[in-house]
Image 1 (spheres, helix red, strand yellow):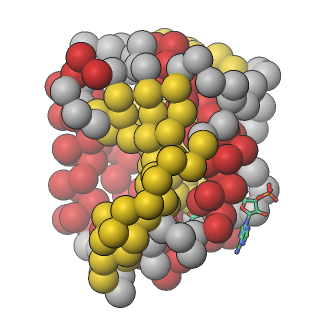
Image 2 (cartoon, rainbow, N blue to C red):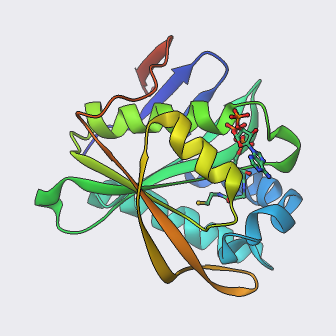
Length: 193
Ligand SMILES: CC(C)(COP(=O)(O)OP(=O)(O)OC[C@H]1O[C@@H](n2cnc3c(N)ncnc32)[C@H](O)[C@@H]1OP(=O)(O)O)[C@@H](O)C(=O)NCCC(=O)NCCS
């Protein structure tokens, strides 16, 4: 199992999800559910029990090597979520990146900072070869995050994700370990406890 590390960047501490975070994650998602659920259906009408079930699956998923879910914090306040899910067989060393932020913290480059940090975790700590990302055609803010981190647009997919209004098409983005990408300085992987 990969050890849990906190990732420290200029403005953020990015922490692996743990059970005691459930109330903070739930409060952040509920505060921003209108914006998040437009593109991510799971946030629509989410209950605390749903959140606890997700947190449990994130903790188990880390231990099983299929999911590395983090929250990101500024000044000890949880402002968003970012993570990787294994995509395909383990030998492909491929994972999918996802992210969201509290509405009130958006527009300051913080998701880009968190996403770029988790990308480094994926390549340097997990030893991944390829990262993927799906964002719907209308989700311009997400396209910008992907492009700023270094992802290239590779394809279009019909009904490949779901927002609160139903299925949505997506653009897929890809980033190989050898591609040029955003450089974060400072960046530190800090062993927990
Ligand atoms: C996508 C999301 C995570 C972006 O978070 P953020 O913290 O605002 O992102 P950043 O500040 O790092 O970067 C946002 C970029 O998008 C741009 N942007 C924001 N809204 C935009 C819009 N409506 N049209 C075009 N560009 C837009 C910003 O100007 C910025 O780009 P810039 O640095 O070139 O100016 C946030 O909007 C969100 O949580 N959305 C809901 C959940 C979601 O869609 N997740 C991704 C699913 S694929």
